[in-house]
Length: 398
Ligand code: PMP
Ligand code: GLU
Image (cartoon, rainbow, N blue to C red):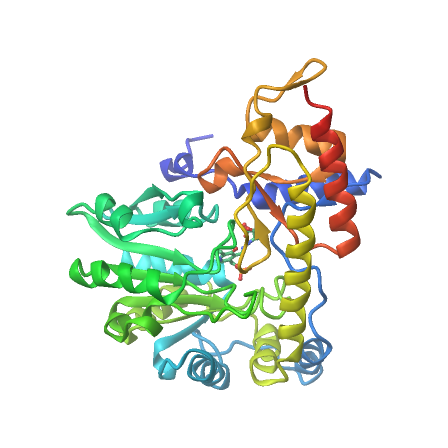
C-alpha cells in the first residue's frame, strides 16, 4: 500500500479516549476497574431531554436540517449567551456542530494556518495541540505552575509571544486542573491580547460546573473590546450529561461563523436532527438538573481532596470547577513494587490500573508529566473505593 498522508505523523490518538477504551475492555473481561480516566458525566441525560429526542424520532424529524443548525436552536443558543453571560449574538454568529470538539476543529480551521503559532497554556486538555496541528499551525505550549493555580499569567503570555502568534486558547473551568479564571486574571490577559490583536478561543464547555459560589466569567464578558476577536466553543455534552448526543456550538464574529458553516457544509453537513431537538429541550427547558449535577460534583471534589490529603507525598491544587483533579504524584517516581520500576506518570498509571484497578490518565498528554488526571465523574461510592485502592497501591511502592 502507498504511504498515507504525512499529517497523520503529527498527531497521536486521543489518550483519554484510548484509556477509556482500555478500562472498558478490562471491565468487559470481568476485572473490577474503576474508571477515573475519561471526562464524562456519569449521570443520565435528564428525562425531558431524552423525551424530546424520542419525540423527534416519532415525529419523523429525521431529515437534513440547515447546515449550521435549526433556526430555533440557534435562537436558543443566543438566548443562553444573553441569559448566562450578558453576551449579545445574532443567529448568524452561531454554528451548531457535532460536539464541542467539532466546534473547536472548525474554529481552528477558520482562524489558523501554516506559519501561525497558537498559545496553549498547559496543563491543557489533550486535544488542543492536535487540533491546532491539524489546522497546519504550531501549538506553543506555555507551562503554568501550581503556584498560580495553573492560571496563565500576563508575564507568561508576554514571554511566549512572537511575531507569528495568532491566537490563544483559554479553557475555564479547566480540563485537567479544575482552574476557574477570575475577572482579575482575565483583565490582565485582556490588555495584552488587545495590544497584540490575538484571536481568543474560549472553551467554555465546563461553564456550568463551577464550585464554591464562584461566578463564571470569560474574556468577552470581562473585556467587551475583545468580542470581535473571540470565538467561544461550547456545547451540551457536559452541562446536560449529553456526551453521546454530539451537539456543540460556537459563537463569534459573523465572518468566523459563516466560514465555519461553509466548512461544515462541505464536510459533515448538519449535526444529527434528533440530537438538535434534544439540545433545544436542554437549553430551553428547566435548568434544575444542571445545578444538581454541579452540586454532586462539588461534593465529590471535597471527598476526593479529603482522601488525597491522606496520601503521603501527593499534592493537589484545589479544583474550582469541571470534574477533574490533577494531583502531582512525582514523589512516587523512581520507586518500585518488586521488579516494577515507576519511571514516570505512564508507568504509575499502568501500575495503578493493574494493582488497584483504577484508571487514571497520565499527565504527559496534558503537558505535565508529574501529574495524573483524576476524573471524578464517578459515583461517590466508586470514588471512595477507587481512591482507597490507589492509596493502598501507592503505599506498596518502596
Ligand atoms: N473541551 C474540553 C476542555 C473537553 O474536556 C471536552 C470533552 N471531550 C470538549 C471540549 C469536547 O466535548 P464534546 O465534543 O464531547 O462536546
Ligand atoms: N473531555 C473528555 C476527557 O478529557 C472526553 C474525552 C476526550 O474527548 O478527549 O476525558
